[in-house]
Each structure stands twice: as C-alpha cells, then as structure tokens.
Amino acid sequence: MKKGYKQLVEEANAQIKTYSVAEAQAKLGDPQVQFIDVRDIRELEREGIIPGAFHAPRGMIEFWVDPDSPYFKPVFGEQKEFILFCAAGWRSALTTKTVQDMGLENVGHIDGGFGAWKAAGAPTAVKERKV
Image (cartoon, rainbow, N blue to C red; front, side, top):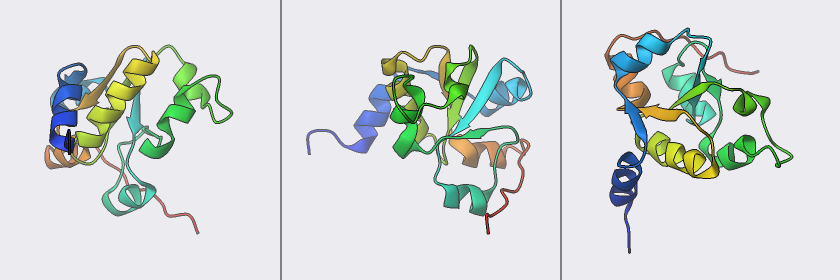
C-alpha cells in the first residue's frame, strides 16, 4: 500500500479549513452557511442529523457538485459557505479536499464530525425513516 487512509486524511487536513464543533455550531442557522452531511443514509437514521443539513452521500458528491453533471444539485451552485461533516471527520476531510479541488469555494469540515458534534451537546434531530 503506497498510502493508507491515515496519510490521505492527514494530507487533506493540511490543505482544507477545519472547524471545531463550537465554531461550526456558531454558524448553524446562518442563511449564508449550508451544512452538508456526507454520511450514509443508514447512519442518519441511526444516529440523527444536524437540523437544516443537506444530505449528500460521499459516493455521489463529485456528481452532485459539478454543474455539468446530469446529477448536479442546485444547492451546490449557491453562493454559500459549505461545512461538511461525516461521523468522525475522516470522510468529510477527504470529501472537502475533493470538492475544493473541483473548484467549490468557501468550504470546510467539522473536526470530529457528527460524533464530536453530538458529544458536545450541539443540536441534533431525528431522521425519519422512509417507509
């Protein structure tokens, strides 16, 4: 293995903006900020969500961010700050680096992810399961 996940995450973190939970929480509810949840849908249903976050699974992010893609999501065309998160901050670090490399500006992620957010007592909500 030339590079393991730890090295990839470390390299990404050296090139992206990282918010503490407190810094991110201070931005919750700001109309110029969009939280992006890159976790799997089962994680949202099991662990909960950050109110107002947009769910963009990591496996689709390149297609949803690119305006030339047939899967483009208009939320990514808005002139907002994007704060990404996953469960622990690893996937969101890699994803933040990817979308930054693609040209998405004003993007960062939450150190420690949703786990740290929840442990800090920051606002969460229940994700309703689709029947």
